[in-house]
Length: 98
Image (cartoon, rainbow, N blue to C red):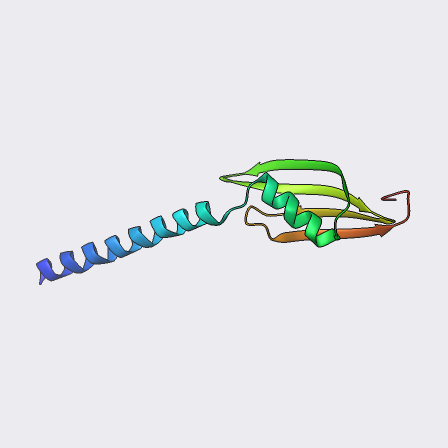
């Protein structure tokens, strides 16, 4: 009986360890670099001129922030390490943010 329990625990630990390793590897493969994040930000705004760019480190991953102006529209965007837009604000006019 004890041998069976040890085998089951060993198998469960192996599966859990494999799942954690797979999750870490996938997160490293799926994250975007600065160039890809900028490309995504410009796609979201329909192009434009990048006025500021900031890359901050959050643990193992970077977060990207941009201020972009396209015509009369000003955009402030934040993207996570995987290229998902987490925040986007838009303002009209030449004065930018008020």
